[in-house]
Amino acid sequence: MEANELIVIGGGLLGAAIAFGAARTGSAVTLLDQGDMAHRASRGNFGLVWVQSKGSTSPRYARWARDALKFWPRLAKELLDLTGIDVALQQRGGIHLCFSDAEMKAREELLAGINNTVGGIPFEMLDRAALKTRIPAVGPAVVGASYCPLDGHANPLLLLHALHAALKTLGAHIVSSVDVTHVNHREQGACFEVKSRAGQAWRAPRVVIAAGLGAKELAAQVELNAPVFPHRGQMLITERLKPFMHYPTDGVRQTNEGSVQLGNSFEDVGLDNGTTVSAIESIAKDALAAFPILSNVRLVRAWGCLRVLTPDSLPIYEESASCPGAFVATSHSGVSLAGAHAYVIGPWMAGRAPVPEEMDEFHGTRFCGSARNQSNDFMVFHTNAH
Image (cartoon, rainbow, N blue to C red):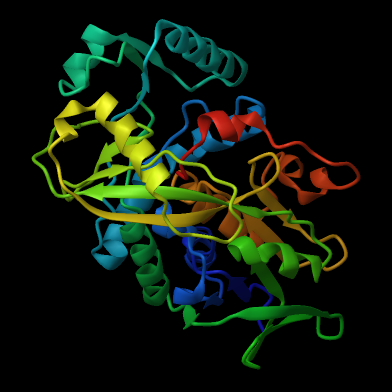
């Protein structure tokens, strides 16, 4: 086995981006993908490439998100060149709608506080007239908005498809429909043995656990702490419309195909990824308040998905101290952070780059020793997966 040979457990947006980042640096990569049996968060990702409001309780996370967005043009181009797949990146800014003067004031204070602390996250508060020049279809209930020129959106399903296709182009080995149950550290030979429920086994000197909701149990087997839990988000999609939104908002966005995606729910319901009439009605009501033009539009699909969260909503990236070469990675921002996962996390976990600065702030050990309360940073400002 080569020293940089790597097994990545989890073929969603997070695992695929890390695997891609490792493979493009020359590492031999095996990606174990649970496939259709997985509670894949990318099915419900809202597709935002987003930094405004992120990191209000963590300057390190604000910097991490800001820098991740800078990688996005490079990532989109590289995936297009390797696979011919356009992930539909549009990064000309994003808008958060406000429905009262009090909301406008609170939003401005929030964004100013983040930018003053971190820097490099510009924003502009738009009154109703200025907002109408950017999105003429905005409804009368909206009094204004915040705008960040770094933000944008992409197609999460095309991104996942492109990452898998790029991995194959780079010679990575992708194994589908694998339910991993064991990660064993074998001190003799300095390698890890990964076993599936069906009895399959793989060995490599390095392993990344990026298994979403399965990360908690697998990480514990190599003495890592990943206290992840599910929250459900529900989404709606409309029929295709003529373009009327040239900027995404964090509750309504028009996709590259013309359909409009709606979603702004956050529910603690365990592993239930179904839909409810009450949530669908609430999402539709909010969307109509923002954009009355949608009142006669046909909804073609509604679905639920499970987002993968930590107690403080921040990601976990960590190498095991007792089982070196074993890593855990978890993040609810699979689209926004895709570039950082590919160009920073992947090479590090493959042994091709040094440990990124200040990674200790993202260690799962921060949850050890005392209970942590759920952070309002996610509950209030991150209602959609990005």
